[in-house]
Structures are given as C-alpha cells and as structure tokens.
Length: 238
Image (cartoon, rainbow, N blue to C red; front, side, top):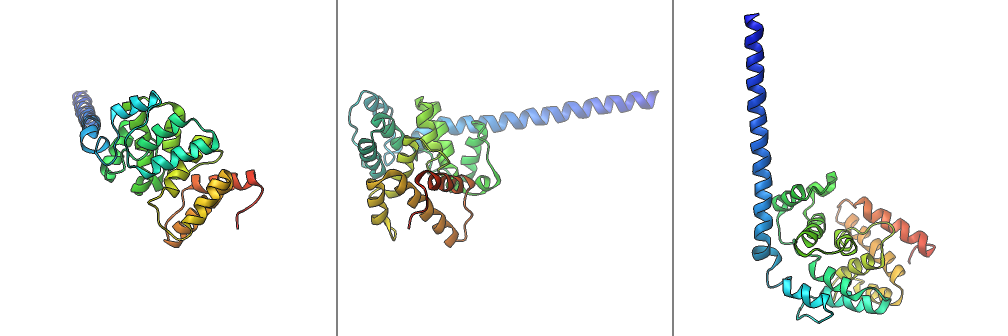
C-alpha cells in the first residue's frame, strides 16, 4: 500500500510539473507572437516603402487617393476600373497584400501560430508561401478588412480554384505590375487587359512552368486554380 501511495504521489508530481512546463511553453509562445504583432507596425508593416499607414486606410475608405509609389497598387486600381471591381477593396488589398513580406521564416511561423493559421507541409518550409497568409491575418486584425479583402490577400501568392473578381485582380496585379521584368511579361500584360480569365490562365500556367523549371514544388492551390480556369474558358492557352 505504501509503495502504491508513493507511486501515486510521484505520478501526481510528474503530471503537475509537465503541466507547468506546457503552460509556460504556451505562454512563452503566445507572448512572443503578441510581442511580434505589437512591433509589426513600426518595424515592418508601417515601414516607409510599404506605405501601409492608418491614414491611408481612412483616406481610401473615404474614396480619396493616397500618395504611394507601389506599382502593384496602380496595377490593381487599373484592373479594378477596367473590369468593374470594387475599387476601394482593390486599393486596400493592394496596399496591404505584402505587409508582412519582410518577416523571416521563424517570424512568419510565429504569426501563423498566433493567428491559428493551418499550414501544409510545403507551406511550413517555404517562406514565400507564408506572407500572403500572415499578411491577410494582420490586415484583418490591425485594419479590420472585410472577408473579401482578406481572401484576396490570403490567396494572392498561390491563387485557388473559383477565384472571385477581386482575388483575380490582386493575384494578377502582383504578377504583372510594372516593375516586373521576365520573358513574356509584356505578352502576359496584354493578355490580362484583353481578357481577365484568359490572362489568369496564362499567368497560372506560366507560374507552374517557372516553378518546375527551378525544380520547386507547385502548391496544390495553384494546380487547382489552373484546372478550374481552364474548364471555365474551355481549354488551354497557347
């Protein structure tokens, strides 16, 4: 009986210690993520080159212009006007879509834990796939963006099947903005401005070919986006 009691006490102590370690670990992780989001405004998100300012959000919401040199911002505005999208949503999404792009992999993963963003195996190991997800989360948390803007930012790197008009515009504006220089970009810009869906099909196909050429994996969302838009337009793009 004495041995049984000693084992029970030892087990209880062990459970208590383990629980304390776990709680401390969770607190440390949460605190680190909280500290990270607290410093995002001054260190990353609010940096001059991103021009992601609270005043800009207020001005855009009021239908006013903002002073930005962001080339993908202007590309998004042009596409939204051409194809009849909500210009205010396009402007906000364009300003915020890269707001966490400067963060490194540990910081991105910390934000993903903080915002409970689920990641697949590929996303956990590829930095370029994370800023769209964390950027969307920060945009909603810090600026209160709508679900439409959140999703446009969230999917602007990979695309997805059955994209909304705003999602297509932000994806393509980021792809063809004026500072981009790669073989075929002018033809792609022409295609996008002639027919948005056919331009999207070409952009997705080009992106997959480029990734495969580098020996990089292609995210399933991108494959699904291409398959979907090919069905919508009734074939592939030569």
